[in-house]
Length: 473
Image 1 (cartoon, rainbow, N blue to C red):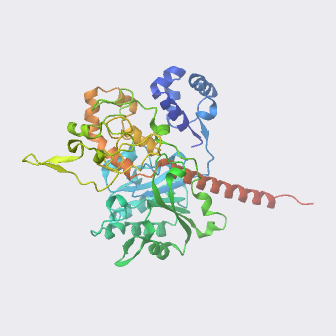
Image 2 (image 1 turned 30 degrees about the vertical axis):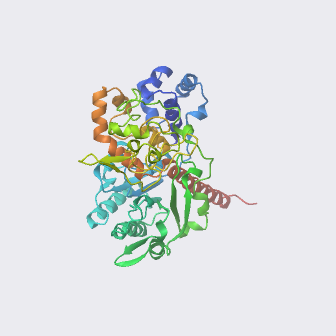
Image 3 (image 1 turned 135 degrees about the horizontal axis):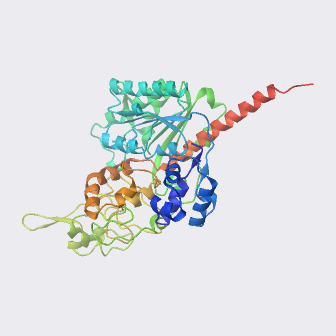
């Protein structure tokens, strides 16, 4: 991919235009719209008409992305592929992606994440049969694309027992934490040029089981990869590096030793950017006041229903206030026993039933973003949890990302009843996938840095070769 039109789709969406409306307003043909959707070249005349229609410059709708031949990646524990979609945006070809849950993998298929169908690997990566599928897909890709190496492996192993949201469980999840060892073994075998691992703040100091030996994850990295890789581990809040929400995580980036002399690992990490507050991110979206309401122009901007009596708990809250602070016991979270006794809910986390502030950075998005009782889920002014579209923006998921095979134009054209059926079937999967994800922008920035670094190495090598060919007197 040389040209990318993600800026166009984001700009059009900000103007409340879907692709069909943009086509009609700019006078584009269906074939031109299809080429734009596939990031293919179109005529300058078509681009000029789009600029005229949107009253914008060319730089606001199209990017030229430098291409190094056959850049590719493998993604492990990839869920719906939200994070590694950033590699696709930067022109990397998907070699293989492994995921345990089929409905998550189906989202990746809707986004054409890998080049060949055998690259969608469904199953438990701890099983030899699943690993064989992964390795066979990699070998097939290398043969078909005439490449010898994998450029990058991304892995975001499940973090049970490590997450603050899980209150540092001590229930045997150390075995689940050991999935990271499976990833380290795969990196050791594949020998990619780069690897990227993302996980919770406590990732490297958490214990795992490495073939029946208990050790810290940082020691497993040393044992498996220090012979072949130079790597760095950094803990930082994504909100300071381009993400639209607060998310403090560990990111480990490794470079194969035969390349490490030419690469500064620090330069591969995302660059810093000013924080954005919640209003900057979602403030332009329509206010939703009626329970069950769906924006007619956007199926993913919806008021998710909840038990009606709970609305009384949050309706009078000001930004920053929690329902547990209400003076009236009936307006504080509670249950009612069979005998009619009011039983107050326990406030384990101070951020439950808390109305968010427009002026603050968007909160960390968790997997249970569908309920008022979860962490930081209440909209700043509406009596509801954040909509899917709002969560997508908070996690920097581009509007071009698809959750199903159906286009958004098709979904938005459905009746309200059809939309309700669709959301009942798909909403929880989408919301959980968003909560599990890495903000797309973070992986996109890392992918771009890798691409630019390889491009610079290639250019430098080409210059050296040309100098050798110079005729001397």
